[in-house]
Length: 381
Image (cartoon, rainbow, N blue to C red; front, side):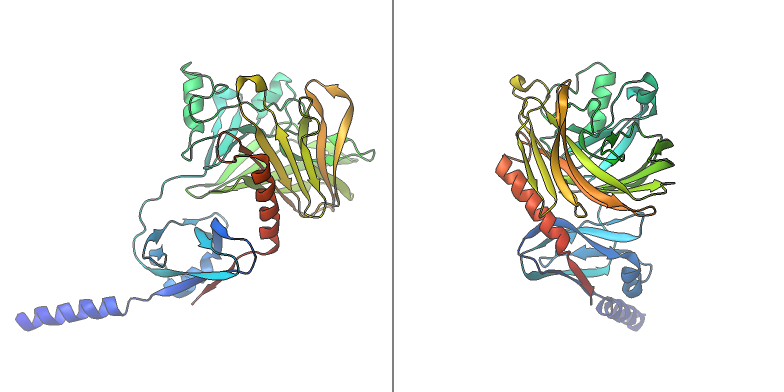
């Protein structure tokens, strides 16, 4: 009996000793530190070395690193890699610890079919079919500011419906203080007609949540059929927001479009700060300092930005006459061929939240643009 016990113990120790451990090397060949950026690894590469067993990822100190498997079969996890260096993580069998949700979104039917999402930096809203049915013109993305890292949007809607508080007031975590109206708002993309006029997209018709955290949120928004440049088209947008980022990645397609057209993400320029923008054609960056709705109420400044890698030009196009409080748009124009997927990035930071000033915002956009040109390289050994 004693010998059997010893044999069992030796088998257990042997199994532990033979437990496969692999390394994930994350190489940053750029001159920019990557702090918290999500690394992406195809799930098939993990399965190739780990099989179908559960696994954990740990850093060099042995601390477990959270991860998420996305709808498009990617393993994503936050990584910290200094400029021009490599960081190594350990991959081994194990049961991962629960992960706090950082990036998430939901449909809010009681608020005229709002669809809203957030991460630890900002929150956003797209308007839905119930709002369009009222006839109200609201074409662009809305921004909800945040000054805390945990999710707050669901509570804001709950408290507003229960008449506990208004999400137009800062109750300690941010608020809705950005003016959209009949404009492209905070970075919505639109086709242009032959004369260069914006063909404003209205509200989404259907939504499908693809990923709902904890680290990455993504949703597919489908828009009603409409006419553009002689074609009956249907637009689809896949919007992705990662933990730790100020910008959303957005992939746009126009099914049914028959001819080469111009597509342009736009940022509304408001009359209270008509010159508060920067255009960088080399990096295809547009940045704007929005003084918020009712700026005298100490609402801070919302910094809005677009990075459009495929842009042929970036420009400020003012209206002949202001339309309400809108003076015009910043537009990043690109050629769009039928069947293409147009990818760009848009988002915001808040001076009373996680983006202290204009200079920091411009630096973030510059670094983000440079990161796109030098993606992280992942190797499993």
